[in-house]
Image (cartoon, rainbow, N blue to C red; front, top):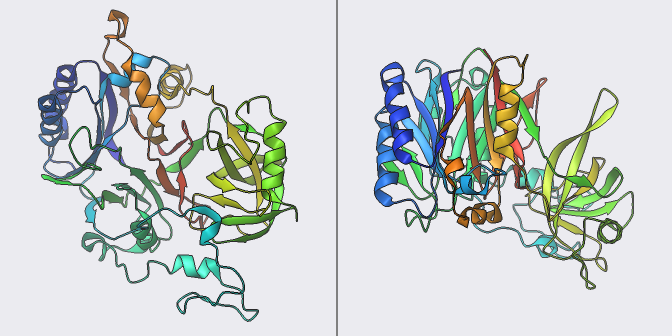
Length: 430
């Protein structure tokens, strides 16, 4: 568990540096997890000073450059921020990973093999001649051992793995499944070619990396509770059962054409003003979510971005290696074009609410490129305050985050949260 957790946001990087300098004496030497967010307008020397100030707290640290947290105050998108968590050296193991992941994103239905095509030798085939996609995907990265610092750790002792990665975390995520009782939570770093000249900027102790991943394993006896929220989403279909799926494709819902059901739902929904006569407009942000029962109510559990769909072919392609299995209860959602999540405001309100039980919260937020572009608005004097969120680690990326939760003795297959405003995280009681 973290001995300290905070997020500081300010228009003036010097104010953040002053805040960090006050923490140095109390946190010195403890392993440190951190993110730094700056805009394209931030001077290179200011960024360098921020990184140096964080590293001065501890020589054992992992971090990355992240994106601005979505806020209703557009000027805040241009502010700098630092989130950090100081951890116990007895229960924390830092690591650097170079395990490769998926080299290129799937491009929809064309990645599904036709039944009349002979499968590749390494893909399992059951007695009926069908490909065993679940086994194939779970074994896709076999041979990738854990990062060296993690090899000697007891699988049962690890309860959480937190990491920052490039846009191909699948290999690491698969290797981390060996910690079967641990929740893994990864933030895909913000794209930084116009800030540092690197596609991603990952930091491990004194080193800077453009790819791979950096992270920590936690073995504290205090197990955190996972949490998630997806503000702004609107359901556009009723709950349905997946009756056919393979690879990243959903081929049938309630034995009906998924793309046809989705297209009908879109054209019947008032928020979907963008329509395409040829199918589903790529400008719409559409998702398929899995549902679980909780006290007799359906709760949204996992969420997958719909990358393509064609009513004539029927299948819907999802941004995942493995679509929901047959028998899974799902529902389709739309994020309205007008949706503008105020994550920063929501976090501030929840922390200031009377009677709120004190906890420490680490939350990764999926944002969008459009959110960052709102920062072009000039700031006013009213936006000049520095904000410190105590007991909160809040970091965002337009590239999304990866989560694989462990609860009640079970463990879910890691999945990518990419819906703007979507939040996944861990909470510790204090």
